[in-house]
Image 1 (cartoon, rainbow, N blue to C red):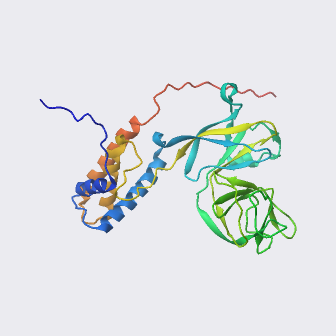
Image 2: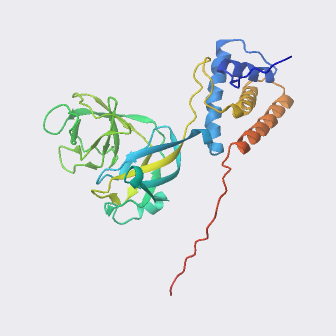
Image 3: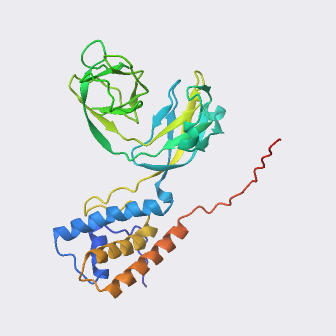
Length: 318
């Protein structure tokens, strides 16, 4: 009598995935360069998947405590977009989640008083690249002494120019700490003032004079009104994160097992496009198979709960 294995753990290491894709192209994995170029194609393929729609296995919940008077808050650097968000007040049994509306950059820019205070009811999601740019500046001190303590909120840079090439508000990185600055002083010596330390999950720390200054282009949110004191607000969100990198041959991909056929077919098509030895007719077949496997996987990987649409009526008085 034959028996089943009793296990359901099949997956493909990167090397096995690449080997399978090469075989579908009618080729063989022969060299380290073949593996390297295939790994690069896998990473490009996962970026393409981010453009195809919502990958449910990459949806994650996150929370950001809102500070009195702070408008802008950083999101994790691998955030693609937010799917939904609420403002939470209270804790445990007294917790209440209140809707906060997402608005466009155009709508946010037309708000007359962005410093109005109250419970936030609107949010603009600023989708930045996540890249980190160098600057010509280094840390000088806190405006009074050289160096910076973990609690200083005034930051002076060197050279002490008018900081014309710095954004009016934004983020800087000193060592491993991300700092948000909402203002630049208008007179010499020009300084970053009223800074919020230890942003984006980093820890406020002391830094020595001469520490290079970098500008991280972090995805972030801008809330309105500005949180008032005593509100105890938390911005709770559900985000779509990037698929993790392919890594080395010993790793497996950051995908559910259901997407293994789509990943294999997609990689085979990508490799076929790069190799002139692949027959054009085979390449067309690889493309057709990739489209089919993606459709099968993506149609299964979707929300299956019912959706209720409620009409919203608006009336205008003359």
